[in-house]
Image (cartoon, rainbow, N blue to C red):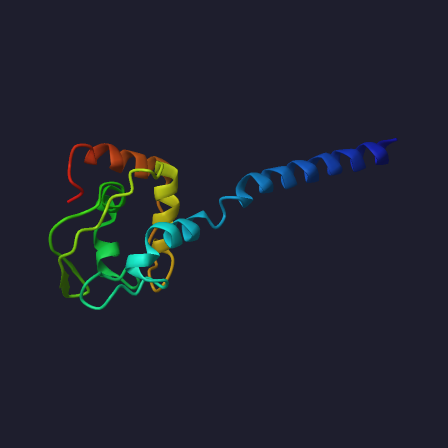
Length: 140
């Protein structure tokens, strides 16, 4: 009887673990998917940018130096010149107002951890707080 109870408890723990894993599996690659959908057409499939027209996000000093403003930049877009890796760019970046705070966090975390970027990941709470500070601004 004790053996049967132990087996049933182990099965319950395993089932719970598998169901929890299922909660996260749909979002596991969300950042990469969001990047492909919203960013790759301009910033490139590998974050390489486009010559001197669109800045790279790969191995980008801008991504590292501007952590606090990146969520607002994604949400609201940007106008005016920016310098990335010593090169000035001056194109309009459209905002992505359709993305949730969670999606912005996942998208930025994908950029933060790929293509030579090794930056600290964002939490959803951090992104929400940073987005709260940019309301009413134009993303700059």
